[in-house]
Length: 208
Image (cartoon, rainbow, N blue to C red; front, top):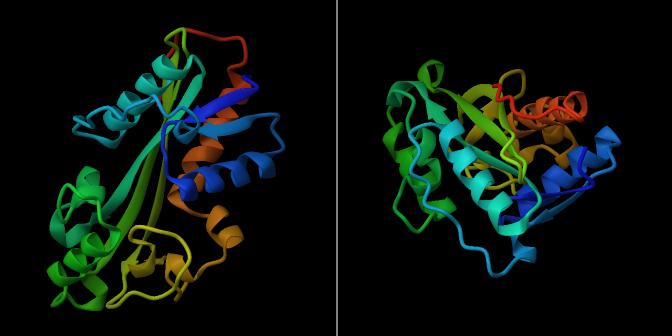
């Protein structure tokens, strides 16, 4: 298992979340982000699936840094919108990737949808790429519904309007520890850390 891995993101919230999950798992891994490599440039996310985009980002980060790279691509899928925003979640309201505008647009699009039909789920695919080309992915899914208005100040993205199944609070009203125990990213990361542990010394195979 590598001693240091780079998370292919400049997002401080994602880095802190991954660092907490790695620490909770008791693994001897130091997680850094692309913010530590100012010469790196983000690749174009041209994939049509979460897995394709995650691999694009992880491959680029591994090539830039020479480290084992982890990257996630995640988003929210809304049933009445046919699974959208999906891979377009971060750019739903435009290329600026403005969380508030994305959230406001999604709420407006389901404004007249009754509560039972406001089903949604967060999806996260995490990709692992070694500098030698070894790569694989894991997936986490977090089902729930959409609230009618934002609530809570924790988290980021669509957290203030996502109510996980089995709770009446939004993801943004959960404590970091509560979110770490059940989120889509936590589930994908847990599978990834288990896969990294079991694959120590193995190369050349890609799995999902």
